[in-house]
Image (tube, rainbow, N blue to C red; front, top):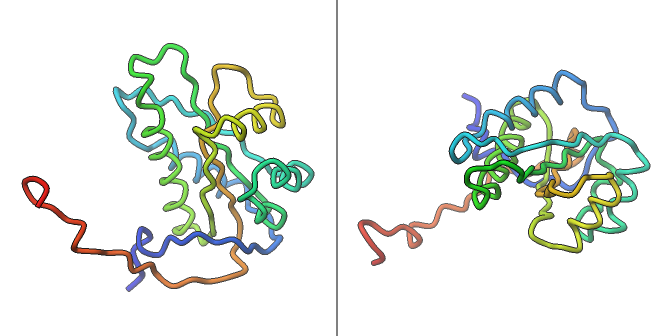
Amino acid sequence: MSIDPVFARRSIRRYRPNPVPAEKIATLLKAAMSAPSAHNQQPWEFIVIDDRAILDAIPDVHPYSKMLREAPLAILVCAHQEGLSSPDFFPQDCAAATENILIEAVLLGLATVWMGIYPKERLMKAMRRMLRIPEGIVPFSLVAVGYGAEEKGPSQRYDETRIHRNGWQ
């Protein structure tokens, strides 16, 4: 019996240099675009980053992205805001897309870690500048992707004390 990918998903910060095949990248992006979104707005846009110089430069502006100096790939999840009927929901939509990338990666034998960008203005500006992202597009999250050089067992985070029924009790 294989483990459920939701429970197997872990944040991996050490990567082997092996490139991620194009078909796996496409599958990750298809999974991301299969996420639910408010009013079916699908505000997401994605930047696939596999240029070694860019991956090596990101840690200079994002303090929690040092693993990109090893990872062969990153996916920047962004949101366009123009024409959305419910623009306040783009963070939930992009978070769902990001999570789908993380879960699908487990099924593909890949390792990932989610790095936040939004709502940190400094990080958003740095990513906009580095990747020539136009105004109106919000850099939301950055996901390192590759083959893990470390393994972690399933997470055990279940805490019954955080469950409330029919109100706060």
